[in-house]
Length: 374
Image (cartoon, rainbow, N blue to C red; front, side, top):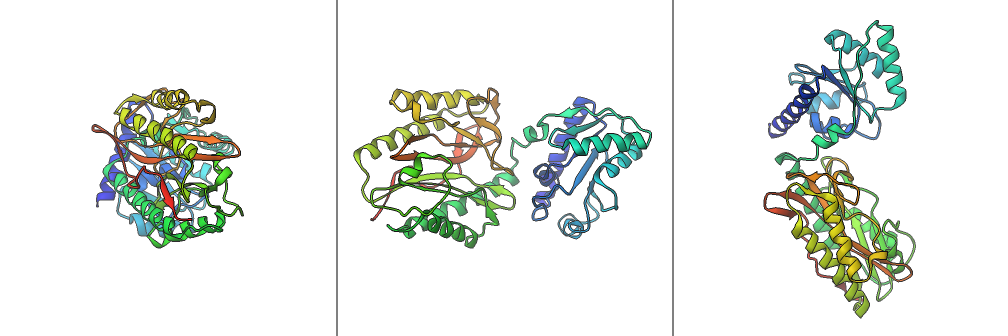
């Protein structure tokens, strides 16, 4: 019931936008948007196989026989969504619904492909209807920025699994293991703890590989004195966790400790500055200022953070280009880093919610540098 109420609230928010813009109907095909509106967890995959049309008083979802029974199991047949697997192409089905609902202004998200849109306009012409098709440019993604309590609960659970896996892997890593072996064990652990999958391709980067922010785990073996950058997350009921910790195998050098403390200071100062409606790029610029004043500005090139939810990267952000407010209720990462080519890299990342009380991380792992016995 809680999920049904949450989805009803999300549909109401979309309808408020439609009323404000003068849209008679909205067409949606982006799977994260559809999951957000329907709550049909465990049905969507990588295929763009479903199409929704919403009006002020109706909501229809078109799919096919591969998914129909799963939607019925998740959503029932007596709810607000009317499920349909009529043997029509998605553009044909949308054109038919536009005609049936007498919709004249039909908004289409710009995530739809040109092929779909071109076919839709052809099918409307074929049906002798000529609706206006205004574009929505990320409007649903913007609505999704503010998480409701049902979403926050799922995000907290995803992070709980991720934190538990961190404690496990710290006791697993040994000198001589490859990055791939560590990755495999970490992902196995998350699945055993209840994850439905992984949030993104896990990063395990040891020694000089850590200087590559998006390094892929390879055959390099862990050596004594290595820093290991570990960036990963659990997927739970469609929602993503994201955290990065940097650990040291054996005692860290003075340089490693000094750089780690700069990154930690940048992280904690930026997190403390976050409040509702802060401008995202202002927080990013604060991280740049701190790291640059410490002499490492040339070794920090990425943004400070990004939104997380049904997608691993979504709005809003703490990046150089996000010059808009970050609203209360949004879930965003804070992840400064310093990357020294040929030597090592350090990143420290939490994921949390922007609240009236400030930034509240879901991540529970300590900010202290974790030292693993060599």
